[in-house]
Image 1: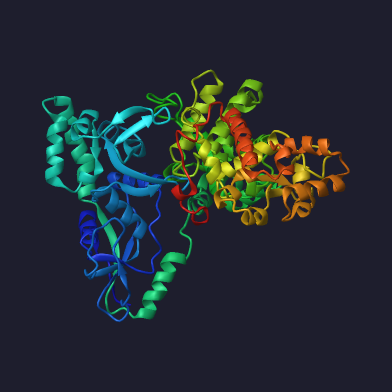
Image 2: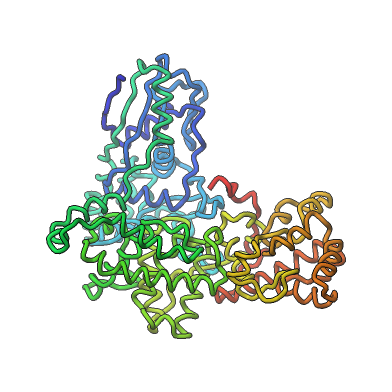
Amino acid sequence: MPFESPDLGLGDLLAMAGVGKVQLPDFQRPWKWDDDRILSLLATVTLGYPLGVMMTLETGGPGTRFKPRPLEGTNVPAEVEPEQLLMDGQQRLTSLYQALRSAKPVDTMDARGKRLLRWYYIDIAKAIEIDGNREDAILSVPADQRVRDDFGKRVILDLSSQELECEAGVFPLRLVFDTPATQRWMWGYAGAEDSRRRNWERFTTEVLETVSHYQVPVIKLTKDTPKEAVCTVFEKVNTGGVPLNVFELLTATYAGDRKYFAEHGEDFQLTDHWQQVKSELSAYAMLGQLESTDFLQAVCLVSTHFRRRGRPGVDPFTQPAASCKRKDILELLLHEYVTWAPRILDALRWSARFLTRQGIFGAIDLPYRSQIPSLAAIRTVLGDESDAPQADAKITRWYWSGVLGEQYSGSLDSRLPRDLEQVVAWVRGGREPASVTEASFNAARLNTMSSRLSAAYKGVLALLMKQGCVDWTYTKESIDATIFEDQQVDLAPVFPKAWCDKNHIPRERRDSIVNKTPLTHRTRRIIGSRAPDTYMSSLEAESGLPGNWLDDIIATHLIDAAFLRTVDFDDFYTARSAELIAVIEDAIGKRAIPQDAAPESSADYQPEQSR
């Protein structure tokens, strides 16, 4: 099949997209990259690291008669015909175009799917820092170019003018391919200060030239490529084999370790060891979806922590010793893995017991699998220290800050090491971790949490069980792990869907976690689609309990049964929202942001099922 393999300059490729020479075949899915992915991609490009191969199809041949569509963020007139169609690389190229060439803020979303408008900057001092983390140097700034804290009340970084950008030493990445604009910006930044001039020289060499000379490998299918072949290639590119992951690469490395072979007479089989670990963890349902890479991350976090601690410049709040990037995992020596893997396994057993105490009993109800490596690493470093009441309280608050602050959905290369070191330091008398101080919960978020794809949704479910809710017919004791499994506990609507639809309850409220609660299969069957006052009578008859006793049991779910008996959805929703907010505030140790201070609705989010 005819094809070419040119390397194209990133600037040239973006310029081609900007004028419509490169467009998409219209059947491509929409662009959907979130803020964290864009930050990571920009770090990759500014470091000169490869971002992967892109594939285009030359137009004008029998296999290219697809309706074209410009990349999102470009202003290409409808009549412009493309020279090439982008078959693979849309998410990367669109992200880079919007961040580096567009004159508008990037229309993206956060890890929860909430819409954001963002400009991207790079901190010059951090970018040229020796051994600095480039992702820490890339800044995502709101559309008004002002970064705020204290629930939006206080501006902590103002970049709303070029003068303020220069003063802060933060370069707007949208200028990186605009040489005259970059030159003008440089004069405002460097001025007459020698130190700033030296910084700019290094920044130019290490960052700006890296980006301006960046080459993208492209496979270009020529216009002679048959349509059948084009469809086959596109299918394989988009749904084909899984790329070799870090676990498989490390498996091959360990199998060739000569020292281990000399001592044991056989190769170390990482795959076999992982299967043993999975077998050991099978007793803990909530860890059922743990992956090999999660285990490797935890091992790498602890190994690098102990290997690098005490080095000059190492500090949990500025430059953590621990790391778990792909590069660090691939450099994990076999003797380090063999040393720390058994301790991580023990820590995972402890983590399972910790999660059970938090009301998390099953894998589907685990808010973040991605938080487990940090939790296990924290336990491994602290050991029995983590069992002291004060330590347990701090670890618990950190855990819920991550869940309810929805902090573990995006890029984790920086967060996992930072959490390990800062939580350990906090337990030992240091200051609060950033994940705790930065965590916040918008009261309005309750209205938009409607499916198990939301970590905070799962978190509220767990908090209900943690605080001791009792089933409405199986009333022997509070729902625990045994009852959860044996009695098939699942979420049920308090006001059933059929009743809500008949009474014109807005879908956002009908489907919200506020209108759901964990109940056994037996109770859910009794409730069915009945109105609350009707099913309350059935529950009394089924359980044989007096009405006031049943009301007390329902109260363990933070529900006032009086609103069920009077079928008053609005008062029920208001009262239960307040109760849930109180439980959430207790878990994260701070007040929620009031609804009127930060209103939001489901329209602010991408559909949860698409994330």
